[in-house]
Image 1: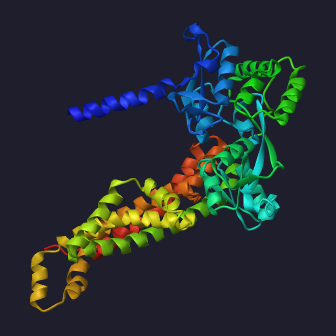
Image 2: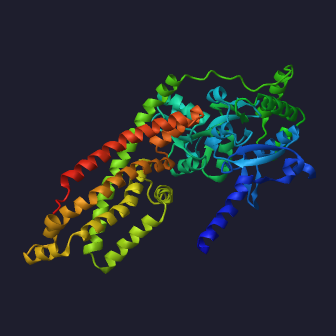
Image 3: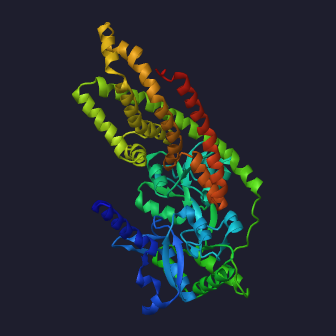
Length: 511
């Protein structure tokens, strides 16, 4: 094994080890004493990319986590006589990870929903939030409610209460919900004019208004929700102990001090804590919110299947459009590299290396967000353009290799007969090159069909994104994954079959 490989392996171990061990939390906020290392551990999962005031890395000490969820988790651990240990996980995977046993409790702005109650154990709510409508400051008098946004695009974070609210109101108010994978880009797109409004938690809205100028949040709440901790079924005893700790910390003012420190305490939260403590005071063993009845398998599939069909249609349209662009641009690039002058060849070679040497996800971000100050492409067209331009680089290499594989003797013979270069390309070189290029072209088309899942980062709800929403609502990737895989197979197998037929039909005769 070479020294370079050993160095890479050592670097990977150094980078991954802290993540596996869990990031540290600010010692000043955990309340743990010097002997905390001797106590049993409470593993809790959260999204470190969620940002303040939930969970974020301290800018001065990136290995230290801070945020009000960090401090609430520390308060729970202290009440249980344990040491808190943070386990990083993406927000939309918290439920699945806690069910797998990756950690004991998930806390990172996790919302109390009927679907979550049906499949998970929830603690008592520890914070009450509101879904609010944020618009551009210039539109504050025009867009006061969702009803004022008929025919408009409204952004939100996928798989949240806000997303469910917008989906319910879409048919009533005529709005177009736009799902995002994060809570930052919706407000940036609102500022740039790609959206007309954003619906999210009041905490996220307040933070975003401080970061993105020119926005205004309407004062009237659209819906009221609660943050909870989630545990895997079968851990009722631990859930009940955590409930007692949370209620005790509400009574002694610990949670109020935490929320005030992060500037999220308000009159609504004060009234909520008072009401909750009073309601639970008579209960011998406080329990989380009542569980909702889990929908049956057929009912669940029936709800999401139409959306999967629609998303599959979007996947097909984007894949076919991107491939058409890739074929056209690839032929032009290949022709330029063979027949063009030195400068043209150098420029086209630079393009090919740039597109092949950088991630397609980065290219999509640059086209959609990076160029927004110059041209605001809709998400669909930015997705089609990004995939098409990326695959054009690969297609051009296929075509160039196929064109150069045609024996030079045939080309010289054609020139001797007086054919022009265009006639040689059309009558001699092109047909033979097409037969050679057909198999890798088909492989690229199937790969592009799968890579189209990347466009979900640009708010396009294609097949994989819809399956992700399905999984977030059901709390499992098994059924959504099987259905999504079946859709991709149904889409890709006919392409492979057609390619084999064409290969056999146009296969060059053997001697």
